[in-house]
Length: 329
Image (tube, rainbow, N blue to C red; front, side, top):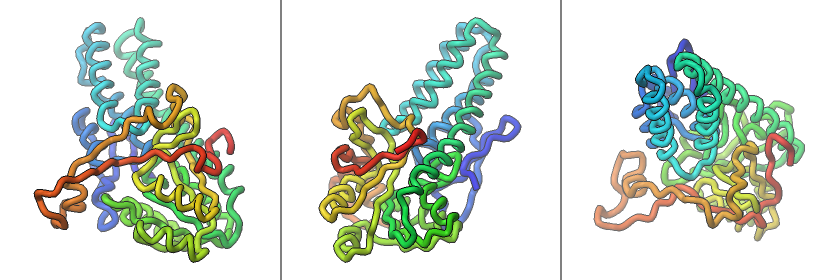
């Protein structure tokens, strides 16, 4: 199953805010709708939003003026707009950067040729991501033994990529190889990506798994019920400092204290070699309602209380046992 489909110049996505209660497919019909789909997490996961944005931008080209000067000006404006929707995940800017490079390379050709090449490039990004997932799974599975109990956080599977995922791709590979593993999935507050998405994926793939409250992770580690931690990443600085879903840093500190291996799984494109450390990573701050009114369903906190809601945190590289990429460990 894949969360984004591009068919006959139509872009469809599985609305992840509707999971796990129902599977709803929607069509992205414009740039603004694509922006909102990413911003509101209907499409999410660092690699997937890069693929989705590339397709979205390629379709937007059909709405631009045929005059090449105006076309190029509007293209760069649209690219900048899309790139602004989620600042922490590097894959978004990386994928849009490839589209911009394609336009730059073919700028002396006709507008119709530019459009064709951009759609081809978006397709390449999508296809490459499938291959990257397979490579990461192949490297990562070597670190898993039969009977390992694995802790994960947020969602890093086929809902977050064009392939089987990053960290969860390793899990799926181990399960396919009939290694007798157990996966503990943190619920991942405040938007419950672990409970709504990862648990849903694990059940679909029939992987032995257990859902836990975020606050139960240290308890399980202390009880000796966790052997390894596998997580994804949204941006990695050149020194190994890693931005990932809020709560990752907590788990890294706890794993380090209990001497449990802590692994990050991410494509090499997640590295931002322009950053010397995690201090330079921009952390997305999201709205108060996500905390005070989870999933928009009912209020759990006083309306007047202030809320701090960072979407990501940064784990120091020294707390990470190893980073698994498509190029190796």
